[in-house]
Amino acid sequence: MFCRFAVILLFSSLVWGQTETPNHTNQEPQLVTRQSEAQSPNDAGSGAPALSAETPSLLVSSYTRHNELRRGRDEEIVLVLCTPMRRFHYCPLSAISDQAGLEPLSLELKPSEGFTVRYREGKEFRTQQQGPAVPTEIGPRVFRLKVRASDNVALGPHTLEGKLTFMKTNAGRLPEMQEIDVSIPLTVVKHGAQVVEANWSLEQPGKHDVGTKILLALTAPIWGPVVLAFVAAYEISGD
Image 1 (cartoon, helix red, strand yellow):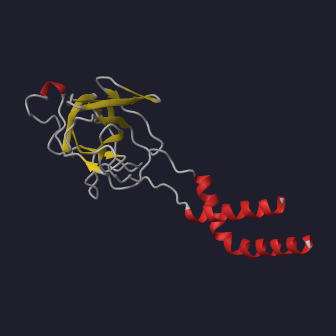
Image 2 (cartoon, one colour; image 1 turned 180 degrees about the vertical axis):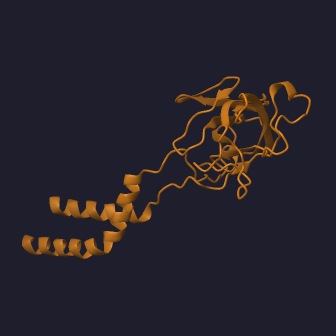
Image 3 (cartoon, rainbow, N blue to C red; image 1 turned 120 degrees about the vertical axis):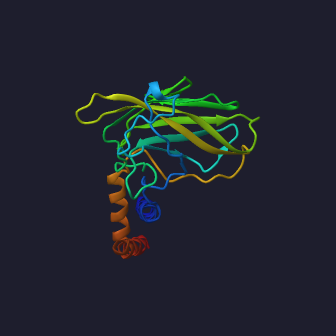
């Protein structure tokens, strides 16, 4: 009985190692907010850009856990601030997201009827006026939210708007507090609607687990005949 159980366990491990794949983090964002000029608080209402003409514009990109927001369910959203690289038109959710000279500080979204926003602070999501930037294992500091649409929110496209405050540092200058507009487009669907989950994570994939899976997959052709021979020998000895 013990030998048969060991054989079944070994076969299960081989199948698991071949079928399960690691979660990749460098994926295209589900939603990308529009580009906006960064402004200092004193110039926020004047429309005058706080950045000089030679300074690259900043971007804020938003990632949603699903492609649509279901009524009555929490939806995880992550916002990233960066200086865009030439080959990217968004802020990657990875270590290559350029935040040099940028220190994200706080995010505040305007109240929107029918929507509840909770900000990640520490290990919990809290309902508060604004939320702080939090570190991630994959590199950039981001803002983590959970948004819920009530059962009365109209189906279809919606937009959450607000501002992101950050510290900008330049060589030979004092740090300056600045702001950038944030716009998060969402599509509200029914509570039980089918949605698609995005393949991104804020954590590093488990290197040990991935290596074990690869090893099992590579050695599967060797272990197969060995297991069959073991089973045959056991059956013969049991007669």
